[in-house]
Amino acid sequence: MFENIDHISINDTFWIHIRKNLTSFGLPSISDDIHFTLSYHPESADVNLHLSKNIKGQGDKPRITIFRINNDQFEVIADRTAKFLHRKMLQPLNMKALKRRNRKRILYLPLSELHKTEVGVLFRDLFTETFGDVPIVKKTHLKYEKDICKRFERLRSEEKSVELATCFLKNLTRVPKKHSVRVEAGAILLKNKLVNVIRIDNNWFGVKQLKIEDVISFATPGLFRHMRLEVKRAVVALRNANNFGDVKDYNREFYIVPFKNNC
Image (cartoon, rainbow, N blue to C red):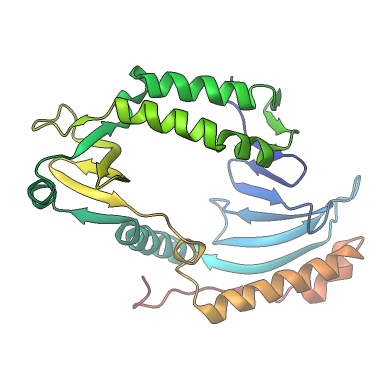
């Protein structure tokens, strides 16, 4: 059903359209007819982020480019950011020491087994009950028109949370000494606290939640502030524009170049 989806919109508050050479997304809270595009065409020398205004029947649409990154430099930034996020997100766990301190009372549930347990069945039923009537699929467009936030709150209600937690605890087992797969994700219970983990061979890692600053780690605070100001300036200029000529002088894009000590 969802394998050909390339356009997702949520309750008219956000939409994203992923295509072969570009990804577009819009925030109607900023403007209904202005959208962002990250362009990464293979024949282009660089990757760029620009804002465009939708005007029906107009080929010469208003467009303001915010920044460009040389393709080679983009790969460097992507590689460094991935390594940085890996270090930030995964924290090594000494499972032998944890077992000693907890008298081997470490309980575990791998995600690969979740669907076979009562937890998986219960969660699937709760999720279907809560969101079953929300998505509408039209060709390659997945559209959410209901109030999703209120439904998430309903799913997180005390009654549902207790029901899920009780079922989850019933299905926890001891950490196995041998593993049938090299990589596995799951959760362990440590001192009444549930910790998300990933195991790679015999190495265990705790999974931390990332902050937005971590995801955009390639940008210094100064660069991030500058990008925000340029986006705001572009939105104001585009609101009253009817063609590219109206905003031509606003195209003062800058290049992002990674420093050796980044990430």
